Structure formats: structure tokens, C-alpha cells
Length: 145
Image (tube, rainbow, N blue to C red; front, side, top):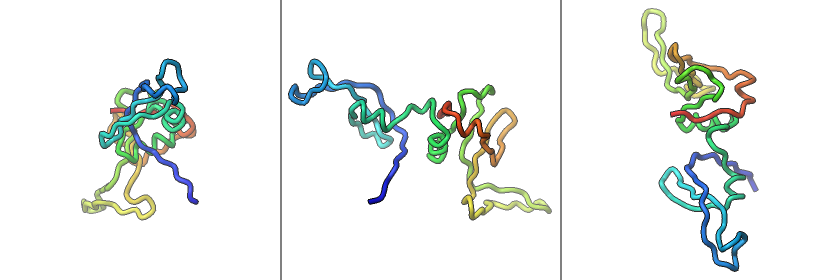
């Protein structure tokens, strides 16, 4: 049997639910858990231990989860970055001007499928941003609006 790993961005909040007394693990017929809202609007409830084993808050992510968020179209940044409005996003369909002012659009890179990380800061956009070792090992990545 194959193994699978999933990554999705959801909204959730701690929420207790009333359960029948014979199924109750907690006092007074309530069980700790989380109300979960999925991207398509579907709402459900998840037991606390199951939820906390599967999900992390989007502030305080590791680099791998931050990259997954960027692939979903989210803007990501480190909490420790000291410039305002600095973030990284996934760019695609790049173009450039070749000698003789000939526009080349989009540039096809077979190995990266015309995608690259783009750093956005006070000086504009830096295409092909490379994360430092500190960035890759940090656990302070977050999704920014």
C-alpha cells in the first residue's frame, strides 16, 4: 500500500461538542476539539488530538509548509524580516527582452516549468530568490495578506 501526505489550508477554532454520556471521555458530556471550515465552505468537527497531530497554525510554519502555501498562491514571509511588506511568492510565465528589443514571452524552462520564487520588497521584485540556510531551517514562516 502506498503512503500519502496531505497539505491544505483551513480555518479552525477550538470548539467543544456535546456527546452522549456513554461515549464521553470528558466531564459533563462535552469533548474538546475544533470546528473546521474547509476551502469549499464545508464545516466539520475534529477531535483535539487528531486535529493537533494533523495541523499547524500558519504563523510559525517550517520552510516546507511555507513552500506548499506558496504553491497554493499564498504570499509567505518570515516573522523576523525587518522590512515592511516584504514577502515571497511563486511566480510563473516569465518573459524578458532579448537583444534587439525582441520580447520573449513566456520563457519555457523544462526543468522548473517556468516557475520561480519571487522576493517582493522595497526595491521591487527579485525573480529567482534563493533561501538561505537560516531561512530553510527557520520555523517562523507565515502567510501574509
